[in-house]
Image (cartoon, rainbow, N blue to C red; front, side, top):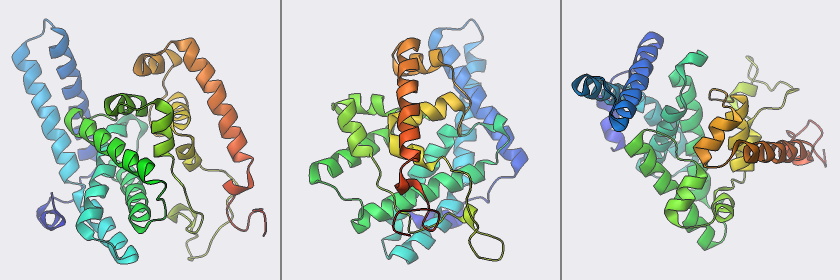
Length: 278
């Protein structure tokens, strides 16, 4: 879909509509599961529920493409990059938000979508401007992994773990994690850190954006402690990743140690709050 198509899209859904659509999507996914395992329930009813779920997913997607268009326009002006290319990357961020949305947490989907679309656009602009360009092979692998993850998201309406995408592409887990590692900049401060008068306020509590630097370890901590998703048990994560619960427990201990180590580094502090050289 191109950026010009967005002008004919419906407006952003209300909070109540988002809640109803999310329930319908969840019911549709469960209906597909029952059909796959041969449930004794009426196949016609299950197929009808599954179709309603897909339609709800499409409605929630379309109703937020205006948001993608708005953020893409701003990013294109700011970075002087092709609008259509940024819009496509913004759509990938929207798809990721759809796979992560949990209406039981009480969030507006549009709020979550804004976060993921904005993050996707910033990463896209940095790549296209050369800020994140590493060796050619690593860059090509990063693009390939992103494309495969996007295909899984589009076809199965779920987020594909790095481990699964690495297996599809045919590379090791360490190679995939290295290619997906993101270099971040502290040049910009997020909107949530701005005071109402337009100034900057001191930040005493560390956010969770640093988890993106930890690759799979960061994803594990998000799942275990319900950061952006519901809390998962070690057994659930083990089943999802194809490992035992005890292995997940060991991975969690290592992930927590890495997170603590990262937070103790001066590079994790905002400029003016104790960063070396200030």
